[in-house]
Length: 112
Image 1: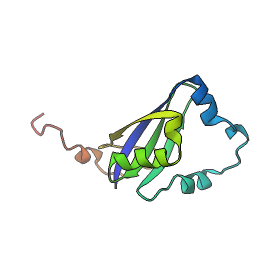
Image 2: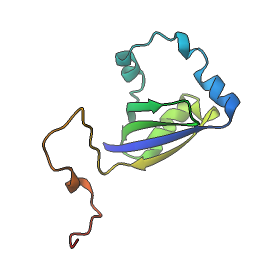
Image 3: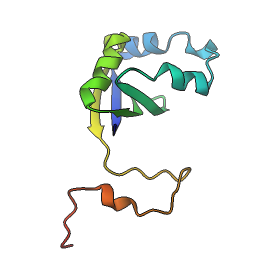
């Protein structure tokens, strides 16, 4: 599976409010969250949410359409717009390997 970053934004402030309604009292653990966001053709592996109008998720899928379809099947397109971008390079200081990560960037100019 390929890795993607998804950038989500709300349709408007009312959609944002409805999207998060009830989550203040949600008791779902991070382990349960990971299981919930694992679909047949796409899997959300990380999320970053602030108080702004955008939030971000990392996904694994064969193609970006699988992510959009998974979100649509859950009814989320009623609240958010989503743009997905394939990730060529991902460095996470919490999961360092000691490997050289730049080999994954296929478009780098070998002459520079």
